[in-house]
Length: 442
Image 1 (cartoon, rainbow, N blue to C red):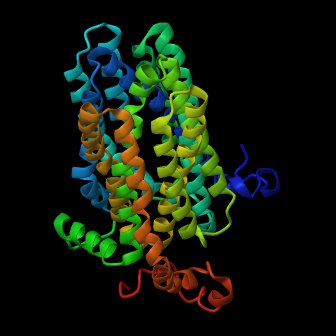
Image 2: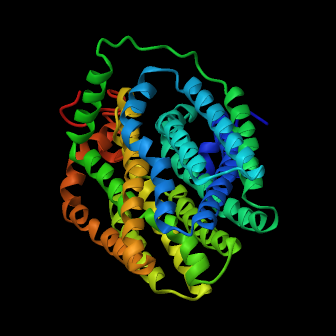
């Protein structure tokens, strides 16, 4: 493949793929993520089949994601101190071993719930370091700074294309040959991402000499992120939607089997519909030329996400549930990806790993707390009323952000001017300064 691709052929929506490294990484990750989603569906169905317990569904999710909450900030320090490329090679290889072990247990018929829980903790620990590093690493793969927001949107597109394809395949395979084959396919799929990482052409890594220790570096990252209201607000939005909104995916096996009276294929359809909506949202973001206006987009899509969840909680008809899953997926991914894009735009390069680890902690670390809480409540009042409450909380959580949006815009305007995002003001400043820290952080 040529080093560059003609921009007329690729189109503005896919402009980040002109960067050779990003293109290679994109393809490898895309294949691997299909396996990841297949494994996720397989594990959810396996646990519910073995236990018939909504609480244990939440407990498995908790086991998988709580390490991100506990270790995420430390992972950010690692991403800023060490070679991100090497860290990703290690995390992806360990993830392949984890999936292979779980597949062997399921295929031999010896798997028990405690096996699943233990291996989910292992995977969660690996992911705590992988996600924060990967979020910071993607920026290194894009040749032009103006393509960063497009790369983030394409990453979301890739993630949700896999979410559309993976569950659909998994639903068929689970009904045909069982959950173990889906997990085995995931283990094999890691070969693609490892191959892509090994073929990247990167500049030699130069370790920065830092005087501060891990705790001092961690404290500096917290101070930087939470001392600037726009960054703090974006991380809080991600945490809220993860806490109140993400539990819907934990309860989907219950909706598929007990409310819609289907099987594993029905679960695959629901996840696929959510993935299709999310893919549409990611492509919507990919065609945007600027981050200007994303604040209003977040307000709309977070409200849409909460409203769609509330409506889904009442549905007992498959076609209506699928339509509502489309809106749910669209609202969720546009909100999350918009927050990610804004953070990547605002953050200082030497603190990118730490800030993105806080994003990952909010995204993946709050979800297990929400899942455990929601699954416990669902055992008492049912999944429908629980999801109704989750949707309502998502919808109202955006109100404080909406009320503060004008003040936050004023705070980020100096950064946008220096970056050239507001071109009529920035033309004279662009040559004098690069990416700047939030006011007072230079």
